[in-house]
Length: 242
Ligand code: SAM
Image (cartoon, rainbow, N blue to C red; front, side, top):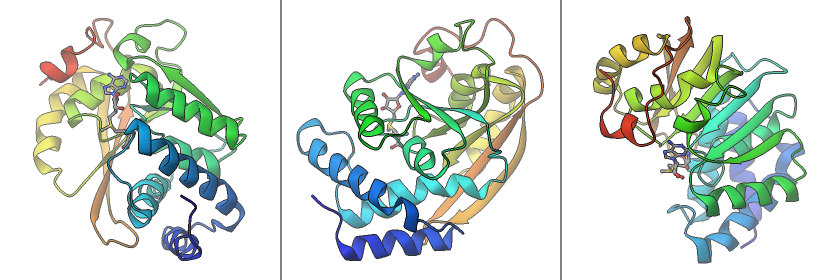
């Protein structure tokens, strides 16, 4: 399916609401849209299939991460559990000055992400197939990223264990969450501290187009993560730190 003229306008308007001029990137978003809707017919990459949903809930929601001011030029970022490329791919389109590693445990999803990156000539991305619990224990990856992002992967406590070990001391983790965050924030405090992080801030925003409430939870890595973390694959989700 091709993005319609109305869809392109919707995307430009959503970008404007986020303070972004998306006109230079419209051809890449249109191509990404076409690949996603075509491949999704057979592969079931995402449950969001309609044009409006993809534009607001995938593209604009991903780009809303840039409301956080910490995305400095030259940053090295990992998107943990990127799925079909969210939030990493839309961010890589508009921020060619930042390197994005896009990690997912599901092979068909990461193959799709690699295909999009290649078709859109996104030289600032690398698609990685694997689990963050394993990557976080690899010497070449552990505590090497300036930032980690994650959306719709896990509770805050689990997300902290999947991301903080990968981030350098001084770097940040951005966890995208929907409307309800108070309980997760309370339950996640112990895990964040054990992993060498602190809760730095929570940004509240409205998703362009839909007006839905969103939260960007920002964790700062202040100390090295103790060597026992992350635990074995699956354990952070089954038995979250408290
Ligand atoms: N972030 C995408 C989004 O918001 O559309 C995908 C969300 S999807 C619900 C969760 C994804 O996280 C799945 O593709 C799954 O394979 C991946 N995932 C879950 N745990 C993971 C882990 N420990 N390491 C890497 N990927 C993981």
